[in-house]
Image 1 (cartoon, one colour):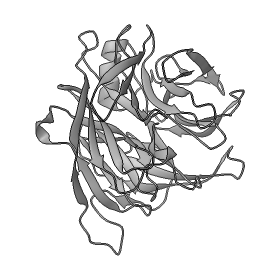
Image 2 (cartoon, one colour; image 1 turned 60 degrees about the vertical axis):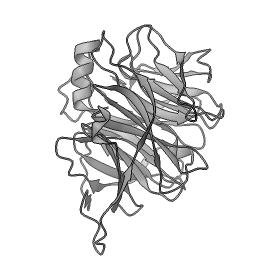
Image 3 (cartoon, helix red, strand yellow; image 1 turned 60 degrees about the horizontal axis):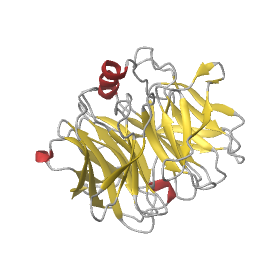
Image 4 (tube, rainbow, N blue to C red; image 1 turned 90 degrees about the vertical axis):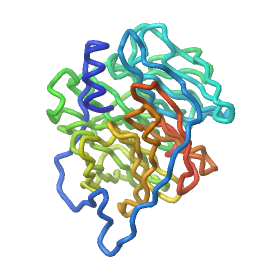
Length: 343
């Protein structure tokens, strides 16, 4: 999620969101400037349209697709953050035909991400404004609130989510979403596999957004929206606390801001952008190696989230703007794995 989206959402839904920037120090790589010792220009990859999923909602003045994730049925699931009550809030798309259908709606949520659990196979979604994490079947049935309420004394505003192999949930939390957007009030939260406990792994973060585990689960990338920075964290052996953390990649994006993230089987990191319809791709060492670009005539302004179909190099973007909400396809640099799929 991003600042202009939050301003739009404030007007449309009556609340905003805060995102993340960590108070850490260390070395970083700047977008457009490859890491030392490299001179190659980034590869340019043009994305192509698969389907138009939504148009701008009259009630909210926006549409914003997020959280693409593939189910076991081979269909792509995603959420529409600004869908008004009663309109589809979870969509399902056949990427072969471009056909889409409604999976779930309600009268209160602002869903911002989605991912299937590696343990129970249910679809988990975050409700930013409602401060909840819900799960449901792939058919949108049996919706359950799996977590809500305060975490260490502060209500959670969950944005993106990712699972570890045990089924524990890692969530970027825009805590204090009604505070000024730039204040460092965000957190990284871990919800235990049994959903009984939730712990703050990092706090006083300005604008937490995307997160993705490395292929071997030894590291965790976290994107910082207002900082235009990606941090790299390692966890303690039991996965319940942060062992190390540092700024890993700095992004010179001009008027754009970095958004959600995904990782492929080769360890390449894909970072979506808001206010620019493109995705930046970094190798595991933090060098910018490719840019995935949506054509200028597409009528969209953001490419905020990414999914790579598991076992293939078929990459998909959620793309939104005045022309509506779309899914675009591109050729990824590596095959899709679970950390490529949702969040």
